[in-house]
Length: 332
Image 1: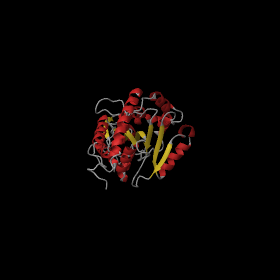
Image 2: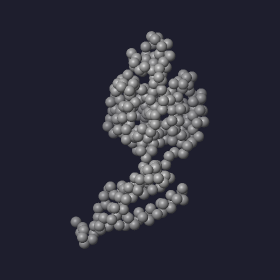
Image 3: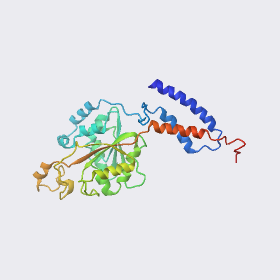
Image 4: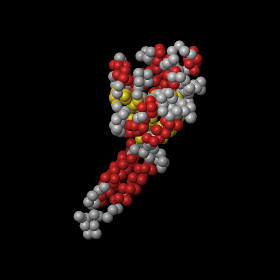
């Protein structure tokens, strides 16, 4: 592949030089033409796919993640309470579904008290990166205190505080992340009125072909849309992601709970672990367990060979523009 890419690069360089010589004759080179030229050259060696519609954005190579996930889940740094919740949250199955590998750059949105960070940070510590995006305020402080308690585990976690209510929300350099994950937060974004901005920022920070993984409390198909009960419809989350540019790649029922009737006095917080009603009907809610949750895998569309070919066709068409310095096209 390296030899083939170098050969393609050499051929493109020759073609590029010829096209540039012709283009230099044009008095004013349009910005769109420059963008197409750069896109076509960069895309030609972007991937190994030969078919017209196959993605040319290279995927991360599979890293030995299963063993490191097992070790993280069994680690002494996790409390007995955290480990007990594995039965309801299924972290190993969920992260495998999202495609986590140990060499990824992962962005975790709204990490709360760090339950998933306890799993992600050890897996990514040696070969990957973990960026935690926390909203300004109470939970930013809680998360930073959590990180500070174990510098041996979390010293490489990058914590970024954001104000989600301001325009132009960003989670980092565009195209810099392989995977963005968020757990039980979309309902809060919806009820606070900035869900569209969060999904758009997630789309921007991901590389082409990158994945957004979302887990949240699932409302009934005709359930409420404001998220104030903690539940949100799966259709609404899918709609928000698609509006930002994502494609829904797959869904999983790994976090489903058919016992959850979703009609409680204190919303989802009636159920464990919150048990907001205290001892009232406690055994009833413990028997139901944690909420029914959607688990959704979205992908940012990858650059395709077809798109690269379209860029090359535009380049060839632009190179055929008449000489702006000829007698038929006198300079201004």
